[in-house]
Image 1 (tube, one colour):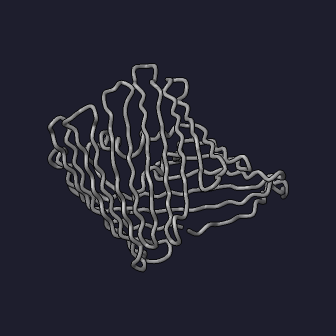
Image 2: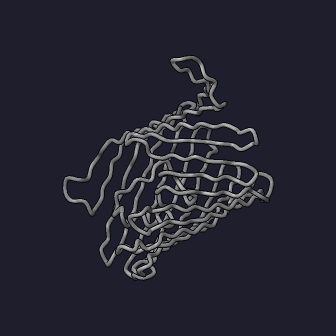
Image 3: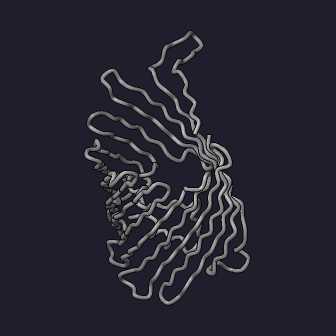
Length: 316
């Protein structure tokens, strides 16, 4: 990924003014997909193929204060407009980050290395298995403690605003270590919850427990995730296994399998598998092919979904 570093000198009409010393980093990604899918729950005429083209640009300003604090302001722009942003202050105490529509600490809870996990299958239902407590994207604050002995602990709070009381809180503990020469272990545990809105909408809570073992060109991970609502109407548990292999020059092969159930409904089952092959054409340019299959049985009704995705991706 190529970064552009710019000296921070501001030029104004009345003269030249030296600005506060800062570096500017600009990165970009363009992502083109050709998607073919078949969903048994869609009506006639809605299955088939379509093309999706996304882009994202991230801009970050960084500087160091006289007393050694590291400051960073960043924002992202996509085809839908400004989509995330944050301001962080880092020092010996750790890192405090003020966030706006940015990814949270639960984002790394599941290790999925397939190039594209695309499914149209009952998205409101299937999303319950993607991440504990369906990670919030409201404005809020994060705090990450300094790492010690391979352990990192982070906490997060997002405020829903004055319209309701459904605030979101989460924490994540991550441990990294070398088991033996060439073998690494990463383990994490996180929990997240959203309060009841106070206006008729029930909150929810979830947990994520996982590990990843890296051995030369192979990485294997497993995780368990729970998600339940305060009204006690659903209580999902999902297990995920992911494997990736990078031993062939320029090629990454990856696959994962998910299975889930609802502890409050005996007739509910969820399963998904995906596999992908990614080829690096040149530095910053890749192409991939991903196949995904999923099905959910809910109340005795089974819905199936399959998709094939061709992707061309460039980073700058």
